[in-house]
Length: 237
Image 1 (tube, rainbow, N blue to C red):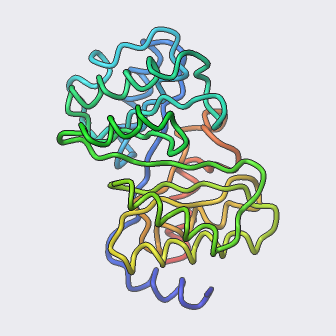
Image 2 (cartoon, rainbow, N blue to C red; image 1 turned 180 degrees about the vertical axis):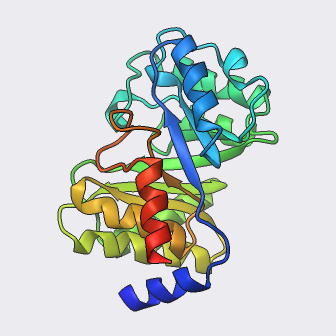
């Protein structure tokens, strides 16, 4: 696996893409962070669940990079604690504004999830799953991925927690499984031991990697900064 990754990196003429999450609590701070992220990101994730007063129109107007709108519920590592219908209404608003991507959890309320998938218009739906305790077996991960594709995900996002170094291999094997099926995927492990998968999954063909703009602005454990990601990729080349 290691040698294959190295060879793929050396042959890969396209640089892996980086998504920078914006995890600010105020509109002004979010706008400033977006301006900074525009200089180094390939796409930007707006974590609406962090904002005290979300104003999506103001944030997405005049955008320079593709945006992902995420309104993550508390059960999956987010800040949102309110009504489920209102949470997904924010994503519907993003779709109406023709934002490039919305991220919605696969374990969202079923009827609301199906409605969002059926009315996505020009927006691509990232169907996401998070496990903060462990990394399931590759067999379980493949079943999860297959279910996401059946539901109609444009991009499957599967994020698990690495208890061991070997957990990274399951996620990388899942990435290869998705690529063979011509299905876009974002997959990696959280935690200190999961950094390997964050670095190598885009090299395997994942749609992008997540990296924070600066230290202290990570949206999940084990997330490297954009500078760290790019420096390591350059050294590997």
